[in-house]
Length: 496
Ligand SMILES: Cc1cc2nc3c(=O)[nH]c(=O)nc-3n(C[C@H](O)[C@H](O)[C@H](O)COP(=O)(O)OP(=O)(O)OC[C@H]3O[C@@H](n4cnc5c(N)ncnc54)[C@H](O)[C@@H]3O)c2cc1C
Image (cartoon, protein in one colour):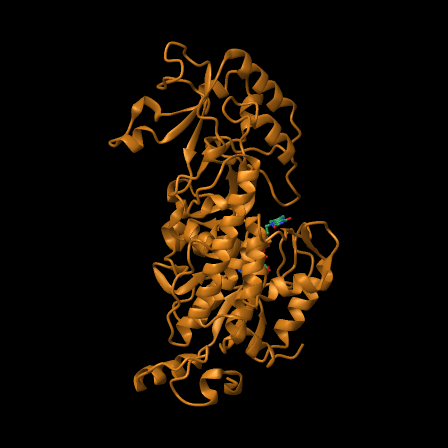
C-alpha cells in the first residue's frame, strides 16, 4: 500500500480522503488502516470492471483485477485488452441536457470516470453521439489502469464465489460457464438468466388513453390499483390481420455465431408465434378474454395487446409477451400499428440475445451487495443494465461503494433523481423482480417532473430532469467526498 497516495495518511489521523476533518475514534482509525491492507478483488476487466478498479484505486484501495482473457475467450471479444468494445463503437448521445445517456456521460465526467475520460480523449466525429476509436480507447484504459500504483492484473478465470475478502463481480453478458453455474447454485435457477427475452417498453404518458383502457384480466386483484394494473389496446379483425401481416414481413435480426437460439416455449419471439399460425397470437399474448373496453363496452375486441407496469413509479409499461428479433426500425413501425400506440415513445425496444444477468431486485441490496454474501458486489451488465455506458456507470458506483466500505466510510445512496442513482435504484429495487429484464438508462426511471405536453414540452421536461440531476449529483459528490477535487488530487499521483 502506497500511503503517500492517500490523503488520509498524509497529515494527521482523522482526516478522510475528501479533506474533511471528522472525529474518527481510535478503533475506527485502526479498523480503517487494517481493512485497507486487504485488496479489493474485481472479476472482469470489461467496461464495468475497469471503471470499478479505477474508482477504487483512485481512492487509495489496492485492487486485484481478474480477467480471463486472453487465455479464455468469449465469442464476441477479440483481444486481451481491458474495456474492449465488443460491437458498436458508440457511447450514444452526448447531449447532457435532453438525453438520459448524455446525462450519464456528464455524471461520470464529474466523478472522474476512466471510461468517459478515455472516450472523450479518443472521440471521433459522430454528430451528437460520442463515438470512439475502439483500439485507442481500449489501449488507453488498459495502459492507464496497469500503470496505476494500486492496480494489479491477474489473468485467469474465476470459477466460484469466494467466501471471504471484498469482491466485485463484473463478468458481463458473456460470463464464463463455470462461474455462471456457481452463480446459479448461489442464487437459484430462476434468479439467473442466460438470455434476454425483452419485450419493448413504452413511456406510459405516450399511450393514447382515449383508445386504451386500464383493467386486469377478469378484474383480478384485491385493490383498485391491482384491478387496473394493465393498459389494454383493442384490435378489430382487420387491424389484427394487418398487424400479423406486418409481423411476418418485418426484417429480423439473425443470431450471431456462438449465440445459439435456445427459445423456450414461454418466451418465443412474437413473430415466431405468428409464423406458427395466424390465430396463434389471438390465443396467446393477444387473447381478448376477460377484458371489457370501457370506451365501447358493447363491442368485444377481436384481439387485445396488454401492457404491464414495469417500474414502481408507473412511468414505464412493457408490452406483454412481445419479445422479438425484429430489427429496431421494423419494431417501431409494427408496434405503432397497435391502436393506442400510434404515438408511443419507446424507452427500449425488444430483443432476444445471449446475456447473463442476475435478478438484481431480488438478490442485491442498495449497496449492490449480494444479500446472501455481502462481501460480494455486482456491477455492469450482469446486474441487469444494458449498454456500454450503463455498465461502466454501475462499475463506477460499485467501485466507489467498495472503496468506501474498505476505508471505513459509508456512502449514502446516490439520489434517485440522478441518472446513476436512478439506474442503481431500478436494478436494486425499483424494478419488478418478477418480470425483471435488462434496462437502458431513460427518463422513465426518474421520479417524474411535471411539464407541458407535446414535443416542445418534452424537451423542456428533459431539460428539467437533467438540471435537477446535475444539482443533485454535484451536491452528492461533494458531500460524499467523491467530487472532482479528490479525483484531481488522485490523478496527479498516476503516471499518464
Ligand atoms: C455480442 C454483443 C454485442 C453488444 N453490442 C453492444 C453495443 O453495440 N453497444 C452497447 O452499448 N452494448 C453492447 N453490448 C452490451 C455490452 O456487452 C455491454 O454493454 C458491456 O460490454 C458490458 O460491460 P461489462 O463490463 O458488464 O461486461 P464486459 O465488457 O463483457 O466485461 C466482462 C469481462 O469479464 C470477463 N469474464 C467473464 N467471465 C469471467 C470469469 N469467470 N473470470 C474472469 N473474467 C471473466 C470477460 O472476458 C470480460 O472481459 C453487446 C453485448 C454483446 C454480448
